[in-house]
Image 1 (cartoon, rainbow over the protein chains, first blue to last red):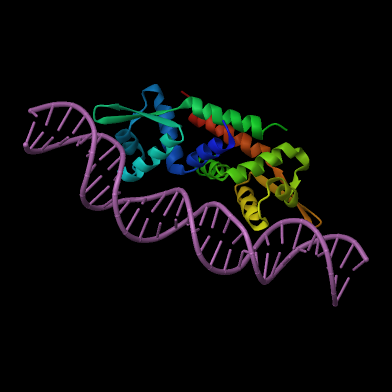
Image 2 (cartoon, rainbow over the protein chains, first blue to last red):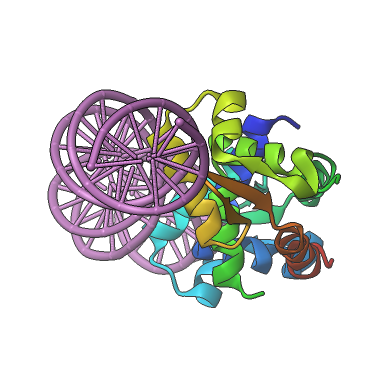
Length: 94
Length: 94
DNA sequence: ACTATATTTCCACTATTCTAGAAATATGGT
DNA sequence: ACCATATTTCTAGAATAGTGGAAATATAGT
């Protein structure tokens, strides 16, 4: 972890739509959610949703696996853990 | 904590300059740093720096106290702790 | 080949953010 | 009152982000 990566991930989580997407993926557990399932839950137009998911993927917080026509999204827990650890180590030591 | 506040704070931390400012303030401990001291450390033009600090203050991550001509800035540890707790509770429970 | 479903990409528009110089404001010292 | 220092506010331009409709692409089934 370095400051550029941390800032990039924080920035992407710093949007209500994307934070909701990430939360939904975490709640969904290891099976993850199809893009269409996220769309049903959050009611975001498909192009907008695709854009937000792509940003989360780009910074490594979400991964995608294709299952036929369906793209399944998964929260990358380890990435968030690393981000939290960075914040605790770099920004919480008094 | 709620999702709007969390997203707002994450977004503000999601910028390298502001994350550096916050880190410097944490490292400075309870005495904090004057705006001018942050400027010396990070070499950011005063108007730009003022803008970034104001944003951190606005979301509650930093507070300021005036000491004569000097404005001293303090990291609000409890706010970051609350943010981290929110992430761990809402986004890390498998 | 055709059709249906899932998702992305393209496009254009609007809004916000970032940056920093210059001017203004605040405080303290002489 | 004047001057110096500290910081913000004003302003404006450039860059980035957000939004969503429409078209394109990908995959599977018939």
